[in-house]
Image 1: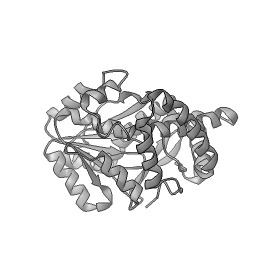
Image 2 (image 1 turned 120 degrees about the horizontal axis):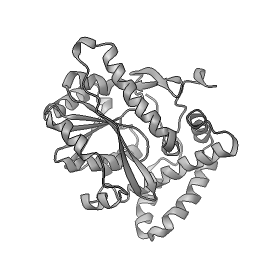
Image 3 (image 1 turned 180 degrees about the horizontal axis):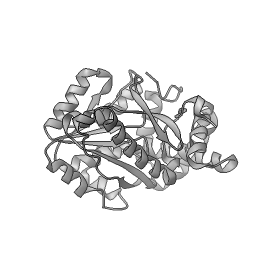
Image 4 (image 1 turned 90 degrees about the horizontal axis):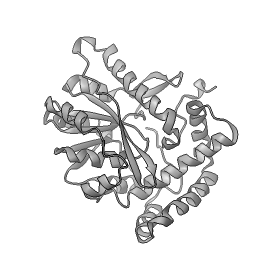
Length: 300
């Protein structure tokens, strides 16, 4: 399994410094502190900087200083994401709504999907703030099951525990078949399952066209949809300022009939990836993947 964050700053001590100090500072100081912090990590984390540059070169077509500016913006977006852990996990629903620049958050689409009684799979990515998105899903009056791989690292476990509450449950995908059964049972109870669809774990993925080159994406959410009858709804929460967000949502992807077992799930995946591709065209500096997304052989 790929370990996404291996650098020396991804540890409990670093996170505690952020979580203990930021809430005591006036909000107007957050952006300049983040700007300096982002620059420091931009300079220190050379491997991650090269990986982001390679990804954004393909996504944006930028080169030279324009590309490096976009890479720096990714580090800045990540600072916003980490600071949001100081506020998002324990925020009330009204406080969460106050952080949206637009109250239109796809409520009608989500409720319409849930009305069928088969649950809903929300397909998102490491774009913008997925943790904020998970909290918004709680407002639909039913449990939210966030499917993710929690690596056996104290820092990862700390972040997982921060997000969990009585309405939001973390389902560890490293549990294999047991985790799959747990997600199916949740969908049969007409609950919401949220899955980040832009990282392949344990090589369980397929290559689909993505910015003119094949790239691996997990097929699991669409196989889960096929088995459960739940639709897949692509959606992201995009940063629109410091700790200010907007919901972007695609069209529901209905479950594929069981007779189209091979082509069907991959067709649904391609629809979701196209929505991700469209969103990244504008918001590529919020794509928080710090590894080479495309196989080395497909690099220009």
